[in-house]
Each structure stands twice: as C-alpha cells, then as structure tokens.
Amino acid sequence: MSLRSRLDEDLKQALRAGDEVRKGTIRMLLASMKNQQIQNRAPLDDQQELSVVDKEVKVRREAAEEYGRLGRPEIVEKNLAELSVLQEYLPAQLSEAEVDSIIREAMDATGASSPSDMGRVMGIVTPQTKGRADGKLVSRKVRDALSRS
Image (cartoon, rainbow, N blue to C red; front, side):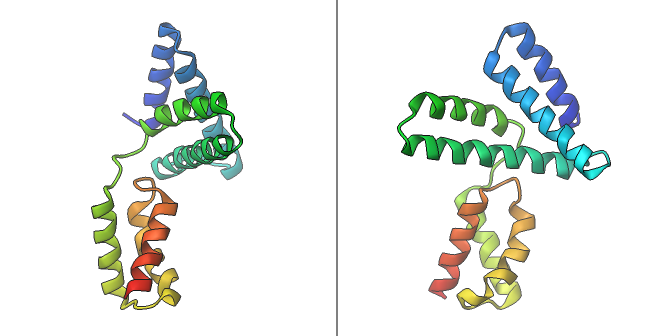
C-alpha cells in the first residue's frame, strides 16, 4: 500500500473515530504533499512523499522545542501529539549504534580523518539515513567522529 493510500484510509478511520488530532495532522500532511506536487509540477514518488513527511516531523520537533523555551506547554503538547502521528508514516528509525556504524563505514570509504572532510562523509551518510534518523543527530555524530579521529 502506498503512503498516499494509507493516509487516505487512516483519514477515513480518524473521521469515523472523531480523532481530531489524527484527522488534522493527516489533512495537513496531505495538503503539504499536494503543495509539493504543485511545486514540482509532477506527481510525487515514494521518496519525495517520505521527504515531505520528514520535513513536517522536523517542523513539529523544532516548534515543540521553541514553544517549550517560551513556556507554552499547551502548544508543545499539540506539536508532540502531531509529531507522534507523523512518525507513524516514516520508515523504522535507525538506532544510534546503526548510525555510528554507517558513519564509520563512510569514514573508511572516504578516508576521512579531520573535520574538513565532513562534506564527503555526509554525502555518503545522508542518503542512507534520510527519513530514518534525525539529520541534526547524524550531523552531530559525524562531527564528533571526525574530531576524535
């Protein structure tokens, strides 16, 4: 089942169940996908759809952090609820050990040994972790690994 059809089916179930958070989040996600499709002037492939989901997850995570700093717990709670719904549509997340392993392999493949090699390592690591690990976490781990070597 494609992500789009899964979203349509989940939206129907949320409407029947009266689940406002799930209904609103799925509608927002479908609208974001439609906007991306219009911007691309072509239907989205599976990778592009996942990219939209990943972008929305990032937006919710950052919003929750920012509103937490501003002392707005009700908005943090709303963003975290939407975040949990969105994460259901991402592929299984990589563990930190798996991310470390991917980074080590990329460092070995590129011969990277200093922080100036970060771009080469990230070029290999990013496609393998996109949508499966937080980009900030991956970037931080690559930076740490390169500064230790």
